[in-house]
Image (cartoon, rainbow, N blue to C red; front, side):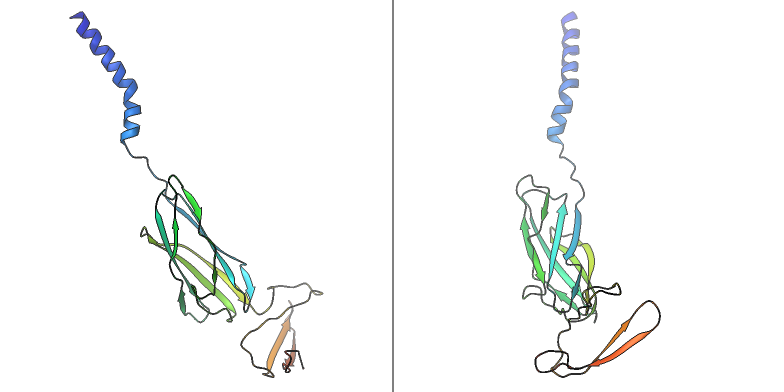
Length: 192
């Protein structure tokens, strides 16, 4: 009887020590919620600029096919969509950066000749999640949005015909404007 009691204690101690090890191999590990970072390079461009779209994913599952669709809403409120962008994670891989792609291109068509704010949206199609990240980028006629008094302002505009009149307004912090009418000559030079 004494041996039965001792055997029970040995079995109880063994189960107590082995249980955590056995349970961790039986219970699936909790997976961290995915994180998404979406951006463009550059953030600010002139008309005609091609933007590099970058999506970084953290908390991914290994050995999984991911598919993303991107859309841009231009300043005229028109929506433009990309073809599906695919990425398959390796076994155990938990983060990745989608291979770079560009806006606008044949696989992600849309305008880049409208000055203003463009809204970029990333939707995860597989595994189905829906919208995962949003950002925006800007297209200006000038190469910056603010200048010091002696800096050169570069203006780039697309879609204008030769000798088509355009009005340029240059202002500074006080409400004073300089007006100049410009025409492009046959060589694209300022003829005004």
